[in-house]
Image (tube, rainbow, N blue to C red; front, top):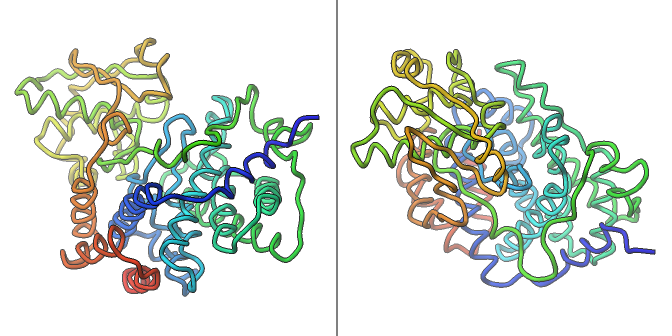
Length: 409
């Protein structure tokens, strides 16, 4: 009889985390802090401040609100907004313990998420469905779990996995942020219950009435293995739009820098990008972030796809440029998805986009993102510098806690 999938994953999570993984985690911590900073003035931030007195818990509502959170391409999910609040949720934990917790949270969330198929992604919000696994692994790491404890916590977290995409059809709702908050609390509580003796169904993934049976049609193997950690496969998002719009933005920027971005603009990309982002007439900020037409118009207007480029004012100003953008699927680009998020704009094709592991963004680039989003969120440049220093060089976990408490009130 084969070993339950969660038993093997639990053993992987219990491996030592190296200095290299901790350094990578620091980049993702700064990236998440940038997203939190940029989201301070939103309705989601006000809700988070009302819900909790804990900075890490309030931040669950901010990490994904600007659509600039990190992403794993084949798992089609965003680990940072879920994993970091869980990894920071034990006040007594050292900085290294928090970084280790994040690495393990990314591992669990991505490993299981990458096994899910297109059927899952068409119906379920993977960051919501898989987030509980990431939070359980992160908090279990802070507690000091053994392999079997990780497996039981993942099983119980996964037993209540959920998060439907239908909120995409109800503009303005905060359901996507609620998914993150729910995943963090659920995964964290699952780990806490195991710490005090609860057990879970170890064949939760592959069992007859398990997660794969209920949420997928053709699940694949868990991602990763005994060597290395999946956090190194995660992409950063430099632009304030849905990830499916990034390849078109990136290609348009290259054309603009070469002096070759001229109307009319024709975008060819993969099918899912059209499913999510074929939106020629966005009416709200969120719709603009999910609009290929608006994304290309932003670049054509000389902008850099920052948060201010998706406001109602920008939507109105760019109407004429949007009208000159056409979009279509290229089956060859679809065939490479999700291993590669590509696009072609006016003949220029990019297989991968800036921020992907194949085209990595530098630490300086993430610091620049921190400054941009801090400014958008109403923070002084000194706060961006403080966050960069604490995330990239600091060894005081409590200082991160204090920063969050001050930022989100």
